[in-house]
Image 1 (tube, rainbow over the protein chains, first blue to last red):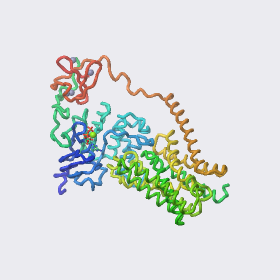
Image 2: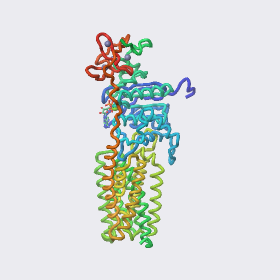
Image 3: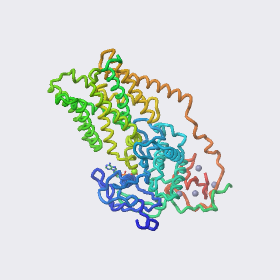
Length: 252
Length: 332
Ligand SMILES: Nc1ncnc2c1ncn2[C@@H]1O[C@H](COP(=O)(O)OP(=O)(O)OP(=O)(O)O)[C@@H](O)[C@H]1O
Ligand SMILES: [Mg+2]
Ligand SMILES: [Zn+2]
Ligand SMILES: [Zn+2]
Ligand SMILES: [Zn+2]
Ligand SMILES: [Zn+2]
């Protein structure tokens, strides 16, 4: 940490990580380093351990061996959670009591709110902005339980973006989200990446995010089997044939 | 009736019970732990009995035993083991049986026990009232002041952890507050019906509200109304207040359910689902736009998302659609 400009601490540093779930090693000796500003796709078949890796990185699961560091701090001692935005893999956004879209999105601001303090005007504005990013601003007063699955997913994305995090950790954020909304989401992410944010994303279908990915990591049975530039058969990012002169096609 | 000192005390206790039980109940319902209050109520019976046996104020022993019981329930729940369910059942029935046994040993009859199980207007003493006021105010300050944090934990526990909240501590706080509320409500609705006052006003409010905040406020208003009206009715009819309060709350629920259904139906008629996606989004027939110099040949395994489009398949390619047409690719 002597010269942060020359050697910025990695956003995520996973060292020799093994994770035990119900007596089975679901991750085995995973090493992964993600620099600040990188956009990394985590790929792999169902059950390969992607969510387990993500959940261990954000401190929801304990490491059986090895460790995870976020911005240089081991996760159990990490305190700057306002720098992290997390979208869990598809869970419903609704609880046992009705809650509005705005209330759910505002809960993403708690990392920077003190106890016994009311919501400030700036917080309200942040929630509004996050809702605009996912094109849900007109539904802010609606109950989340009344939204469709994809709309609920967009609310969860807004909840992760609302605290303006440096590191976004997304577990299949766009599963069930329509193409137009995926494109809006990709634009929002692109803007953040341009501003220096780091993104770690699990996805089976990157869609419009495809072009943003710098690097892909492929898991198989709890081990990393590929770590490198996005590869055709993995990330769908072919060498893009479109150059300036062939867009947007001609009318015959 | 309002000049009677015991009635004044009963009404103050009722007012505070009517506020605090639905306040903490809202969080319990949101976490889908509606029956937690019931379990704590059972355990608190042993606390009351201990007080009667040792000659200490039952309110104090009840709050201590209830807090211990609630902490145990929370620890078992957090472990999430299958055997936890059985452990909780043992705790609940142990609480009731132990309580009845100890009260028998203390030489007290069923009449004394009944005043704690179903509430009693005449037995709220001055010192009881001080304890009840102190505890109820504490519960309300926490339930309102830590509202955003408690909401987040009850809404999505894992997300709350990733925002850096002390989730275990907050969960424990909810359990302890539920235990304190049970004791606050003990003299008014009684230990066996306290859970109803935590849950029914919330269920009633939900019939007409959309946001968490409005549910919280409405539930508290319903709780206060049911408690005060129930105590007055109970005085006039000379029955246990717990029963009248809960019957009134349930009647309120039935009314709200009917009104809520009518409101929703009317809303649905006056504002049908907006036609968000007009048909014109898919122009027909499509102009023939050829993608020039498209070196990549799509195929079903190439990895680009596939979209059904009328009689053919389009490939999604960096935000636009490509369709095979003879020896070239069309933009669709
Ligand atoms: N609570 C659990 N107890 C025991 N095993 C578990 C538990 N949760 C997950 N597993 C196992 O861990 C493995 C990895 O699960 P994980 O959720 O990380 O997969 P994934 O790569 O995210 O899959 P998907 O694409 O379906 O989301 C799976 O084989 C699963 O059976
Ligand atoms: Mg997963
Ligand atoms: Zn292709
Ligand atoms: Zn087409
Ligand atoms: Zn193209
Ligand atoms: Zn053509």
